[in-house]
Length: 321
Image: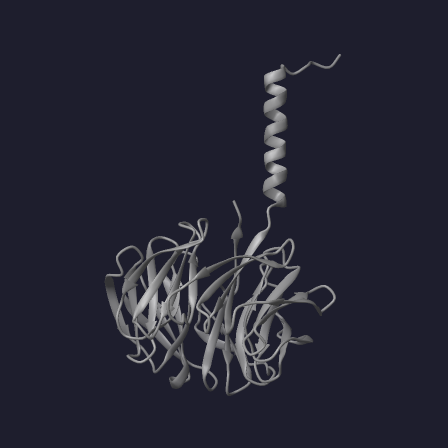
């Protein structure tokens, strides 16, 4: 004979199950930064529609997300500032004055921001609450995109006009290496296991794959014309590259670096992001003012989402609460 649960316990069990089901069904958001209109758009990936828009004063160049605090930080090169955005309330909370021409930005998810100054050729470690600089490093010319390891102890910087990638030890505050890559490196993506770094070399039309332990290049596969965005799937199986002049996204095997597909998208694609389940990718089409939604199983564009003018960067964020 089966034992019966008390009514209170039964209701509690049902509530927990329902809560878990809701959490599993909650969509992951994708965030798109439109430079011309100064808008951070939030895409609901269950419907692939824009669910919210956050207005940012100025023309933001890049942004990062602190997963712990659930805040986004967008650089404003024209005013030397960083806009702080609450992703849950979807409002701009503050503007941090950092000076210079802030462009690339990354977070250590523990209260520090890494900010590249495009014109001064430097990287600053900044407190995300006050904007105060903890340390500053001189790097190559025109530091573009930045990417940090999960623990925030190592930072990689694409120095576009110096044709190299700077590697910074953010704990001991020193530059470990400057790695020569192809012409005009711009976008970076680190693999989920953090063993490899993919570098998109815009004018060379190549990827540089760097071993993050030896800091040596292990492969240089050819891409389409003007690769401007790069990402790696969560299962570390594929690398996606947006080809700006080709109007396409190339997909590479992340172990062999062989090209397996090319998908046509909008005009001048730049930022690209993949959902954490690896089923769909989102591509910011700068000149088309759209986001291409790609089905990675069938390798086709399944939808175009109209968005504010000048979409240039896209990040797949955490699951909504």
